[in-house]
Image (cartoon, rainbow, N blue to C red; front, side, top):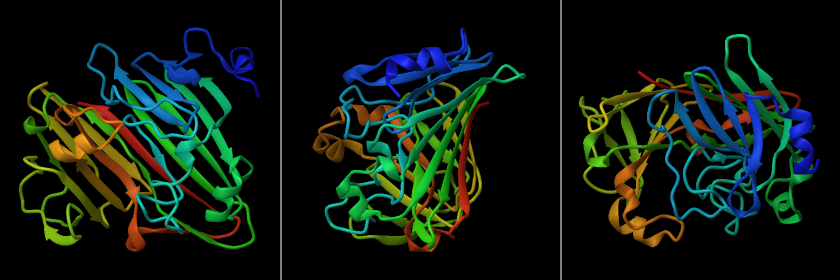
Length: 303
């Protein structure tokens, strides 16, 4: 489908609109009674969520690429069918292929309760030859975004082949904060985590919320509960609840790593933190049998 056909088929006046985005890409803008969201068709990537009358919740780097075939830095990347560098070959792109491809609009809706919804679809036919060498499985993905006073995202993986396959995945949410040194993350107290800054090391989170004073990259495995991001500088609390997820990742690059990333501003590390709803590493990987499906969902709200 050509982007020019989208308004006539899927736009809903005052609720769902399609517009040009940087780099010649296209985004859907969802306007609901309680808030607003924007979703790039490239990567099914949520780049904006703002509850009515409040600050934006998500962060996007001013240096992010907005180009076909490249990931967007910030918002909520869809990491699938592998997380980080866990792909099947050394030359695989980090965080999988789903965030690098154009998704198709499947449906839009103005819901009776005033929320707006968008459903996007990606299947095996969208893969390049190189991607098929990495991922030779038949699949369908559906990504549904619903916005009102909260943002709900559901990633459904369907195995339409004859053999099971195993995935790792994440809704890699980047949150805007007043200053990373002013925030705390609740919900992971007294849990073990894999610290991946330097050689991977298992450590124990004490009974206090997470605070930040250096580069942080932590994999909390076997964690299905919600987290709360407390930002004292902006006087707000963001709740991240999830379903179908057994891993939570917390990340901030701090000074040196931010300077090494070409799509991340050197000074931007102060204004963001990632709290990711995921299934990662061998311990929390998901086996999807032939003919079955798996749903990973996250709900983001401000209290």
